[in-house]
Amino acid sequence: MTPEELDMAVQRHCTSKLQDERLVQIRTLGFRGEALPSIGASARLSITSRTPDSDTAWCIRVDGGVITPPQPSSGPVGTRIVVTDLFFATPARRKFLKSPRVENSHAESVMRRLALSAPHCAIRVTLDDKLLFDLPEQSPIARAATVLDTTPDTLIPLDEERGHIRLSGFACGPAKTRATGSGQFILVNHRPVTDPMLRTAIRVAYRPVIERGRFPVMALHLKVPLERLDVNVHPAKTELRFADEAEVRALVIGGLGRALGHGSSGGGGIHASFGIRPSRPSISYPPRPDVPVDAPVHVGTPATLPFAAPPVASRVAVQPLTAIEHSGFAEQDVGFTPAARPPQPVPEQMDPSFPLGASVAQVFDTYIIAVAPDGDLVLVDQHAAHERLTHERLREQYASGALRSQALLLPEVIDLPRREAEALLARSEDLSRLGMDIESFGSGSVLLRSVPALLGTKDVQGLLRDVADELANDPDLDAGNTDSFSHRLDAILARMACHGSIRAGRRLKPEEMDALLRDMERTPRANTCSHGRPTWLKLTRSEIERLFGRIK
Image (cartoon, rainbow, N blue to C red; front, side):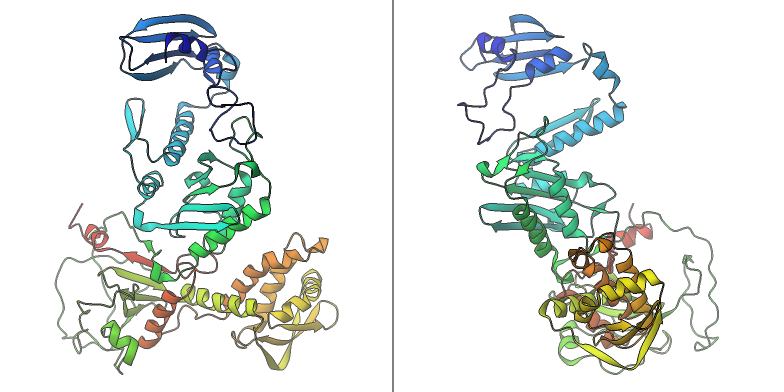
């Protein structure tokens, strides 16, 4: 800038952003002014600028609203703005500043949002002489991975359109969540925003796949026609008004839902991280009746297993995945001992289309141990995994109107609190679509005549009691809002799936374990159970070696 332009830049209402008088199509981040006069009124401001054809730079200062005319100064071509002693002229504002740690966190958050909105710009941020980040010019996915503190291979790309609205960006799977919403970055027409409606849509989209109380991590970019958007509703311009909020909400929920609706073949498992090297006290194993007393024993450094009960596992031999898929497991003794029949090694070449690998053991009759094609160790919670599979089948059948019911040979009479019984009877038609036919059976009792065929007839009383509890606690039920059941439908299906799934403590056959792994790879949202907990964990070689102290 020239000296004349410097002097104009610190005048009230000065702006270089709008080229005409229209405020309908806002393409810039700001439009009311440059904010330099406001900053100069409450802090000490200095602007040093030099044009390419000038022999010297010029500097103008504003201290508490007092302007010092431009003076010659040294400086390279370009403009440098320095703000110091913030709010020294407005002590009332200064009094409401938070602690330095909190204010530093806010400043860093602003810079990260700006860095995400402009991957074509290099941005360097230092705080108290400490470098926070130094980002070169990057591709959008590289910048998103850096800002979100993850790796590019964990990001799920989005590119959805609905009418004239487009949603793009990158989202992390349910394996990566945070305790707060600080990992959610939203851009609307390249403008960083924290709009409540968009955050609500994100929460709804992730609700089926993450645990309650956790927040997903993502960087989304929404492009909306300028005439369909009002950015002039908040001084900070972080909240917006859309001409059609329902359309925007549907695009965000649907786009994220489709991005998250892949099976475990798309990755998404949580990488286990123990972080602490185990101590080295001794361990004693109880004698096993099936192992001879004089059986050979491996000698080495003992370790402690942090379990209350002795180790319990069933071993199976491993075949190549192609053989598993086409011919199934051969009959084998799953109770052999190491001395009698050592396990076969995992094949060096595995079919990469089966990312969860081949099962090798079942621990505590609850967890499946598998070896992935890349050699990583995979741990699967059989109940959580099968719960998700059952949930998705129920959802699919319900959506197609083909959720078949199975009549009970002897109808079940179930006594319930009056409030829960009334809630069930008020939704009897909706429950019938779920395969549960009920009718009144006196005060506080209902008669259950059928259940969903997919779940069988186990624990039908517990199933109906849980459904009654879900419906009775619906806050909109008393208002007669029929949409409330739709909002609770997924929770009810999840409860039904929990009752109809493989229980922890059930011993599985080798072919059952591998069939479960293959179903997980094909089923949408199979990385988490119906309650948002992970269904499988991955332990990499480096993490195992770190546990044993081979690497630091």
